[in-house]
Image (cartoon, rainbow, N blue to C red; front, side, top):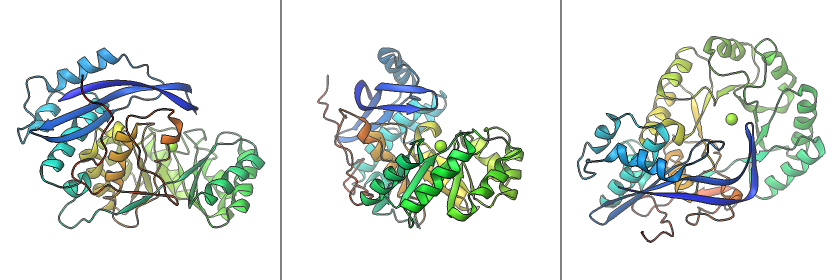
Length: 348
Ligand SMILES: [Mg+2]
């Protein structure tokens, strides 16, 4: 297993709750099983500075002395409890190398006997504009480009958010609309605020209140006319089990990086499905390698696959490979053996 640090310039500054990024650093992982090659990626939270050599050393320590040709290689890695995102890189590379060796795509390799991977996954559009008119314009453009689901970032500006969503609904009457509050609302008024959105046919709201209080989220859900999703609270298998046990969610937003890789994410998709909870997969501002891995994972959601948050390649001025193109709002899941994307890296 080999690890390759990257540091890529962004074409569009990536603005998010904790700041603004102009470059993106992370690691690629490569696993070569006697010619069957698999790739993976470790992408840190956007605000985290990546010390390439230190991260490579940390990843290397998780696999040192282990033989990827062992069937229980991943169990041996897990016994060392690596950082989830490094575990994601290792697991993605190893599983896609295993898939390549079996002559299967990653999704076909991960599929249970009664699962057939979807051939395509729809990609949601993102509306962040604070100004209602600008937000409506963005919505109109995204729908014209093929998006059928729009995710609208909301905040504590309750009245303005209402005006924005009304303008977006008018500009995109047929789109599926989701809200993302990123924990900005108070449990005391979240459900009441959601009733203001009742007329707009909202698919779900992501993380309306701060993560960590499942009982409070369950109460918001009971009182809300809008379905509830957890994102920041869907940290790992334990927190997701707790959310499901508390009946706190209708949907989960899953990031394979945060959960530790494709196998763990697919496990959670199945666990959630058993309780009627659907999962939207999103990537973490990853290169084409991470986006493609997430695409394979999403294809294993039982139909209909929720439209996913994969439209992030446009942020990169330079990528490690060619990302799956978005055609008419959809990405096509690669069917060739392995991950189905090869970085333009020739070894070093
Ligand atoms: Mg979110």
